[in-house]
Length: 353
Image (cartoon, rainbow, N blue to C red; front, side):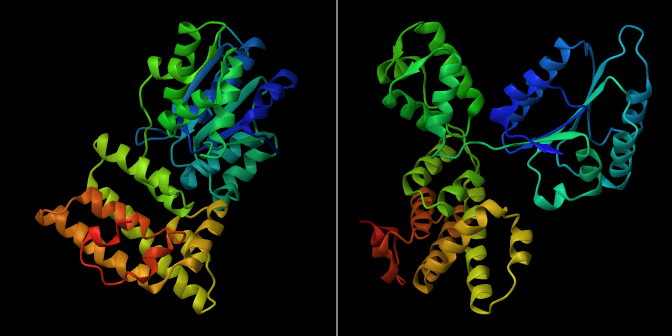
């Protein structure tokens, strides 16, 4: 099987067209964009018929068999698209996909797509069966460090030239919302054709549309990005995220670190923790570094604040959930060394400065 990163897909499609594409990733907009590129390339080669399915409660795996064995009156070439939202086809689906891979009809293209695939899912029977003639395209959302280059690349495709300050502002506003970023760049192209885009142009044409979920909040802590954490927390609250979800993700990260520290002390195998918490291989080093730098003082302080945050949410204690969540988050930051000796503070103001 060929593994191909998304930024190489255009050049690949100019050279060849594979019978099977497996497009899975953590950013729905980018996954959809890759599928659209494959679809357009296939249409140029005469694949005019398209059948699309989604594995949901109403879906029957017989649909895949029927689609692949039904001849069209108008064309012999067809695209079959199947979305696996959780990449869990089950026993029947695994068998159906293996059968399809072993007896794929000529002049057919299968596009299988869905959310991010874990390593164990890539070792599953259905994936192994499809990989023989397939192209696997893992799609990753650019992290904060890679986002400026991503923005510049997208702008260049549209013929836009962005000044550094304009690029940075777009990153600040649209981190976590690549669809809105794409739309913002299209808008800039319409408003300022053949002009160099500066910060004033960006601010005049757009507004802060960054969109986060609570897992993005967790990632800013794991990756030790205090400013990104504060921005993400602010946007979550502004966009109506329930504070109880913020409490949940902070508490979960705390206990993950507690379990990791204990496992490291006892020299236990960490695979059980990675599996239980769905921590990908690319993230594991970040977790380990954070666990090794964590201290009993910080752990105790976090527990104290987590209890107060729960009390504020459930019993309306009068304390600000945002302030409490902010201080809990900062207690995950080893670089803020002033917090190491503050195990028994009694009020969030005690850890300011």
